[in-house]
Amino acid sequence: MYDWNNKEIWTNQQNWDRPQSKSLILTFDDGPSSVLIPLLDILKKHDVKAMFFWQSRLLYKKRPWKRVLKEGHMIGGHSLRHRDLTRLSCYEQEHDIHNNIKHIESLTGQKVKYFRPPYGQFNEDTLQVLKKLDVVPFLWEVAGLDWELKHNQNQIVHNVVNYADHGSIILLHELKQTVMILDDLIDELKREGYEFILPPE
Image 1 (cartoon, one colour):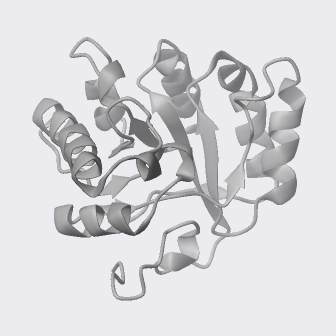
Image 2 (tube, helix red, strand yellow):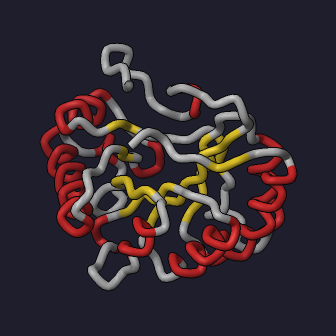
């Protein structure tokens, strides 16, 4: 379980019990977006489960959130509209995080257990709010930098495959260039002997 006393931030699967096989956690930020369906199609093709961290401003009832859950993926919080939480007061942070989580929960009917702060930026107030809401902060260890590499998509694959290790949490985004490389990326990681898992529910 999460150790609030040590204020440990989850960036790697070794924060919980690690299985014997090589495994990764694949995560996608900044959705639900217009490319969610093709992302889900690729994940389904490879029988890969992933985590999606969603902003409230993008979460409409017509987004295919039911399919995300039906196919075994996990949804976490990612703020109301992607503001840097460290620039907000503790009260403002609580308002933002609480309402983001409640929005997701009211729509999906499932409890949100994990929250990823926008830009990976957090402070003591953020941790205090998450502890109060009983939600675990969930960051990453390996970034594909897909948001910077619209015109150099092969580099996204390189960034993940070359730096991934057993237990790594991989940061990607719901972007067109990510859709373009996801099929190859999953193939490459499987060739390296990795399987894809989710954290405890």
